[in-house]
Length: 539
Image (cartoon, rainbow, N blue to C red; front, side):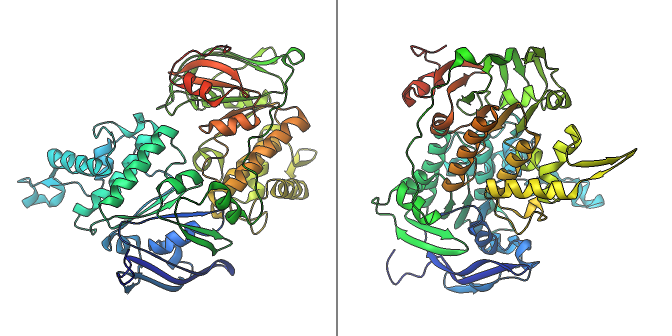
């Protein structure tokens, strides 16, 4: 960008406080047309709040507004709502999906902006009698998909899509708004953790699409905890910590992952793979037997899984997106229709009955932390203790027929896990909704630990959290396993994370176990299993 060129976006001395707690302080940066800015920082660093200010979200105006100025093309703007931001050509794809599962990709892309055909009855009964122009809807959706440059079936129902296609649908929806009467042509796109739910192959497709959009003069703010992706695709990198910009550099390809990680966390951080322990399978009996398991989970169908899980091991389950790995814990724990046979400690566990699983000593940290894992409008104390209280009768006091909560015990266990997992919060009474995504994920882990389960399924435990928090979560899982002997089954899209703490890794392909290998095997062996190739030494 030439020195005299006016930047597309400039944010000057931005500050923001929530109820006396300052979350942003004196943040200033610029972004030119067609540039990609990588925005990184630990969970709670202020990234999402900064983007909410840029996008004019109600949460900002309803909590006293912000300090500083936002300029578009050199002119100060005051966005009072997201519609104002859209009018200025700013689109934002949030971390959590907001799609209608029973609608097609095209219908979601043009939702509430559908082109219509005039109907004669509209003259009598109003515009509601007009009908959707399906041809124009399909054409507009296809135009947005083509502009993104990915393979996406506009006619596919969202509920039947693999997760990567849902992400592409979200982005295509923003691109389609340039043809809307209520939004300007997209000039700046904010992508908040768009690759967090994607497989490596899908993520590469998205990075390619981002470069394609930048070549069309669309500026992009790319928020990601996958630091190598930041290096691969961004023109400049901005690191935030504790609500301030710690480092801002031009990406000259001399920046490395280690540098960014250290800037983020403010301390030396090791990125080396951990040593794998030697687990003695001969002295550890099979704890859980899974036979001919099928699960009807949309986008993650399990067809015929057979798996033995040994007491006290950490078993990893990996595979490409949509192949069925996420369906296994969801099916075993009764969250989706399932069949087959599951036995635990020699006793059959009833499928399609979550309470039976909990009563047997099983617990599950879901990949859907907001939809399944949390009581968003309740305190951390209530979130962490509630399930153990309901299922196991913990943290209760009884006198005759009267039962009441043991407030002191609830507070104590909550503070224990806040300290153990380094959950960033104002107090144990803060509502879960108010935490960053990574800290919400830690609360989900704390809730499971409070159950003290015999076997713990943990699904995508590091999704959407920063590199420092990832290391902490993986370390805590390993230490919990070693301290209590708890059997842990970790399901993840991140192969190297599975290799760092697991004893064995099972790769799921087409709804079945493609093979099981020691975690110490080379990454290439697991890659072969993912594409359906046999590997010597697998079982």
